[in-house]
Amino acid sequence: MIVRAWQALVEMVRIRRERSRARCQLAAMTERELQDCGMTRAEIAYELKKPVRRK
Image (tube, rainbow, N blue to C red; front, side, top):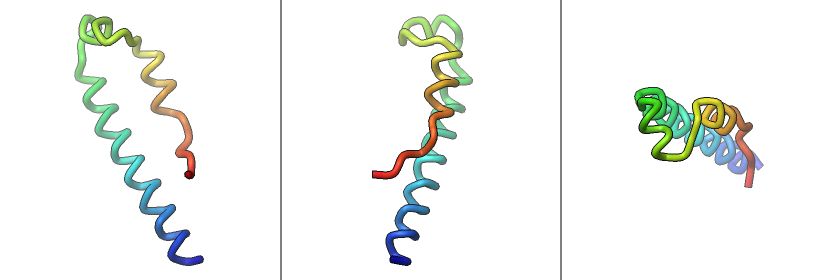
């Protein structure tokens, strides 16, 4: 039971770090680059704020 809780915590931290890196990369993009990807800043913010889901 403790092992599963630890694994869940590690996974949540991993996802949080991954999203943090993605946020930094997206923040550095210009509006034109975002348009080329078919995204807006509002869509990015919405996706990145989604809660971490467990498997």
